[in-house]
Length: 349
Image: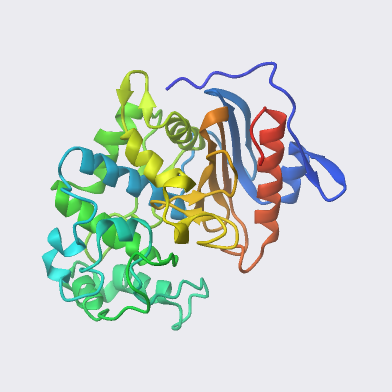
């Protein structure tokens, strides 16, 4: 996919308190490793720091969740997943005794299983994402996929009825990826290559990191790609899944994933969280104009506003994983995104 430069693009500025700031200020004030802004398929900005280069791959962390969700939509369009309202256990019968196994694919996409899960990023024994990570990657579980099934089948209760509320839980994406692989009869890597990377027109090779327990791709956060190819994916999303005359991602599914108006009330902006809403593994911004984001810990973002054709990609090495621990990098990101929209003719309300 060509990414031509926009040689006479408007300068981008943003407001921080009482002051007008520049991109140089943003790079100096944040631990951004890569920043790219695109308008209508043309590159407005491409910046790197800390020795990063265009040919280097950057870890997605939870931006991988949206890639996974788009693969689910493609699999559904191909008939490999019969219905998004099928249960996970319909494709992975070994986990049928668990509450996760009895959760529908649609409710896994929305992170609404209702199964208790604490994602604290404290990496301590009371942090369920740490415990789940040990199931997937602990040396004693290497090449023992039954350990994943055993762990999931201990999860038999819900704290809320499935589909009723959003609660962020990476484990649900990891289950979704394994359901998807079984439904399609191929690896997530194969699907990414054949259904997204090649038809999208990626320039460089990407990587999925694998869980040592079952050799399954880490669909919750282990994708790796160049800044430019993340931008190409953002452009594909901005074009509602269409490249040229080829519909790579089903448009109706993509709208279901990213349009606030298509979400049940509990998943809309300011209901799912005080700010963002949540679609299919994708964050939805509280704007009147459809605007959505891929987000990963330590400051990974792809921001997309389809109507204006604006995409912003940021990779970072923030000291703290999330805004819970340190909100400032996310406040700066939001300020820059608003500045990008204003500078390039986007919609900010």
